[in-house]
Amino acid sequence: MEDVAFASYIEKKHFEPIQELNKQEGWTQLVERYKETKQAWSRSTIAYVMLKNEEVIGYVRGLTDEHVTLYICEMLISKPYRGLGLGGKLLNIIQAKYPTARMEMLASRISHTFYEGQNFRPFYGYRRTYEECKS
Image (cartoon, rainbow, N blue to C red; front, side, top):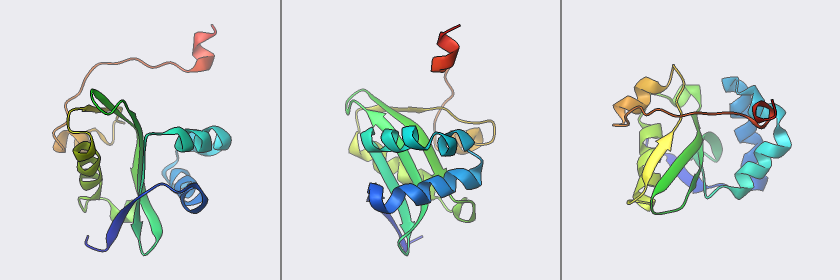
């Protein structure tokens, strides 16, 4: 889509629309943990939104050391804009900014086919929350 722009995250303009996308997607933990999610966005080294007519239609948030590892924390494209190549384009823009870094992320059972189509390969990993480490 030629009328879609990619822009750096600006808290005052973009956070509420990002949270609305999270809500629509059912990513309730990001919505419920409002303060922590907002802080995460403000401290992320990768924070971009996708805009169509100034409306946020997608985003990506991640962390990088700029040379070895680039980790995508969340990426979300609004449902009406999926399947148009926008997610792949967004990932390629980010990868081009950090060409020596490997890009890593977690995927859901639903999204794994998208990432495999973008030449990502599965890898094994672990996860725990702060609450889980207390037991």
